Amino acid sequence: MIIKLSPNPTEATIDRVSQWFSQQGVEARQVNLSGQTLFVTSSKWKGDPSELKTLEGVESIVNPGTEYQLCTRKFQEQNTVIDLGDGVVFGRGNTVMMAGPCAVESEDQVMRTAEFLRSKFDIKVFRAGAFKPRTSPYSFQGLADEGLKILDKVRDRFGMKIITEVKDTTHLDAVADVADIIQIGTKAMYNFSLLNFCGQMDKPIVLKRGFMTTIKEFLQGADFILSNGNSKVILCERGIRTFEPQTRFCLDVCAAALVKELSHLPIVLDPSHAMGIAAQVPLVAQSAAALGIDGLLVETHPDPANAKSDKEQALSFEQFSEMVSVLDKICTAVGRTLVA
Ligand code: PEP
Ligand code: MN
Image (cartoon, rainbow, N blue to C red; front, side):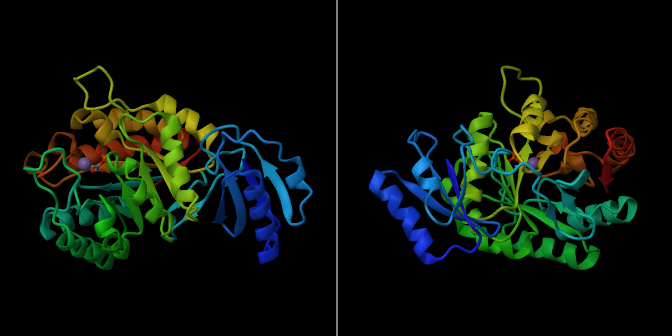
């Protein structure tokens, strides 16, 4: 249950509402989100809020009826719009292409990729990880701080925005210094301290769905960030694990379609990690674009065969180019503009 207070509530109003809850023995969390002061209780609280409505300073009460609450359209009907400038807008009818290699491997590899994306397609958001959450401790873990410095140079040289991932709280500040968008990966999605800290950042957060996460848990993850005050959450469907071993994961377009209705947050899709096989990534990207989504995350590399991570799914520049020309038409057909 979400209790909205009137704008700019006094301390006395906040205390009154807070005391009402303590008298009932109910835990209610104060949330400051997008200039609104709210109290949110667990959805399990089935008490009668009618007396609350009579308290001075209480504007309205919303009961989304689900355990995820702040991300729902019942709380906020209209789309959350996240505008990073330079035409990079999530949630307003565009499909923003975010592209680059899986990992920062070297300055040369990153600069070649950024040069290609910016000069050929005017792509505005560059993706690459400096802190890589690998499944094996023996494989390339990323260049860490050195990698972040290289990403900073991409922004300086090409004027691109940077999306890069954070694995845990130890390097969150370092990542936030460089990133325009902070990415929380599929495995880090269950790191609730990380979600809380990202909720205290004034930066857009791409929250990737865990590959074994239900839609409900995914949206609850978003609520962790929102309830800490950060309204700039972008959801990312990147494939879930099924019984099928021949594709890396399975892009859950059903979840994406449903989430568009359930949540006001922008949603982007990652066909690269879902498919895991470069030759088929463009087809999956096409089906994702046809859904009418806010963005795509796609991996491309100047020399896929020698990529240090996720080489099987990295598109060559040729494959990437062919994909973009088709995506452009699909986005137009579904009433969107591809921001690339
Ligand atoms: C990535 O974007 O390179 C990545 C590791 O993504 P995910 O967390 O979805 O596996
Ligand atoms: Mn990757």
